[in-house]
Image (cartoon, rainbow, N blue to C red; front, side):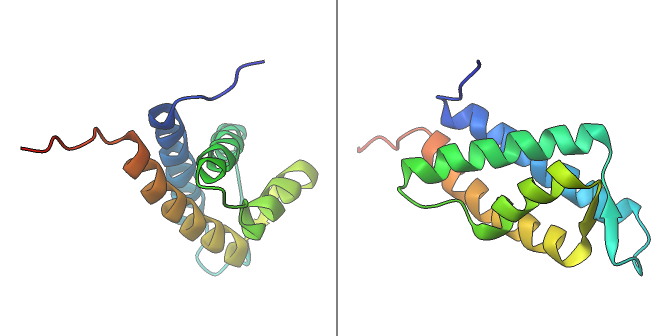
Amino acid sequence: MFTINDATTAAINILGAIDALESALDCRRLDANVVMTTDQERELLTLGIRDSLFILGMHRKPLPKVLSLLSLRMATSLRIPRTKASAALHEFRLVEELAEGLSAPAACAA
């Protein structure tokens, strides 16, 4: 099994999950209470959740409940409530900020 051990790769996958959720939210009717995800979006979200767990583990933080619930929801349904998708998008962005800090090269002291 492939395991993530690189913060840069994790950050890229989390960006993919952000893009997938933004796409799912933007392409569907705004008045709908749920969004449907494509197989490709679901794959990107799965990678994003896995890599969020990796990044948060490096900071000794738990996976946010909304991302855990998103994972469970994707396992049982193609539909994601719009409010949950928006909350997950917010959490992915917060994790991405952490990941960017890990993957950025260290500043040299002059």
